[in-house]
Amino acid sequence: MLQLKKSFHFVVFLPGFIFIFLLSGCMNSFEGGFVTKNKVVLAEQHPNTHFDQEVMVVRISQVLLIGRQLSRAERANLHFERGVLYDSLGLWALAHYDFMQALTLQKKLPEVYNYLGLYALMDEDYEGALEAFNTVLELDPTYEYTLLNRGLNFYYMGRYNLAQQDFLAFYQANKTDPYRVLWLYLNELKFKPNEAKQNLAQRAETLSADYWGTYIVQYYLDKLSVTDLLDKAKSFAEPQSPQYAEVLTESYYYLAKQKLNSGHIDEAETLFKLATANQVYNFVEYRFALFELGKLKNDGELTEQSGVKRVE
Image (cartoon, rainbow, N blue to C red; front, side, top):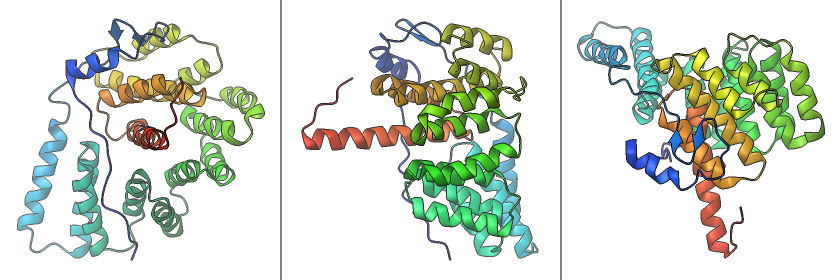
């Protein structure tokens, strides 16, 4: 049986005005667009956004409680469905419990191993995550999003050649998807930086404008400024809509990765925090903004312990 850590070292941040106040001291060096000294662009919060999901959690819980005639497969499916709902609500410990329950009832569930692999990765249990993702592909070789997740696992392990194989296979399955292109680029920056931007430009030619990430690729290629990107965001999604929160989550994350790769640690940290502020819990960018913040915190603590001053 796959053994996965359950400690979940996820970071929690202060909400609302306190959150923005704490960030304001780090904004002096941003140039317009999403973040300035006196302004931070965030989506409006909608209290009822998750109402339908919460209702479904209650209904599934009731069925599991009173459904004594359910088969093991049916109970496993209900635990999985509730786990997915918990995951989308940011209740990852509860989601983990349900996924483990589903696996206890039915062993061959690739979608469950995929989630468990993500949770192991976010807890920096790279070997456990790799085992989970390999299990997914053994059970279902067509489960393509596990290629992304396993690629991310290799990326954060520093095994960039192996990450490249997974990211490339994931990209070849859909060459119109900019997020597949972005992760290839971010990975190539690590082990063949002289080719990364040229490859990004070539792959950008087949991207679909239906994805917000296509505009982020254009920004990476210096075809849009940060201010242009904000203008595109406002035209791509209504600022009052839940979709705008998704757009901002993605934008802040990939802006943060750019700052991190150029060595601007404080700015990257601020942008990663902003990527979490819109609470789009089930997005890759939200999850890995938290992950990156945890790594930055650990790196900062190690630097302090060694007596080395961090230079920006």
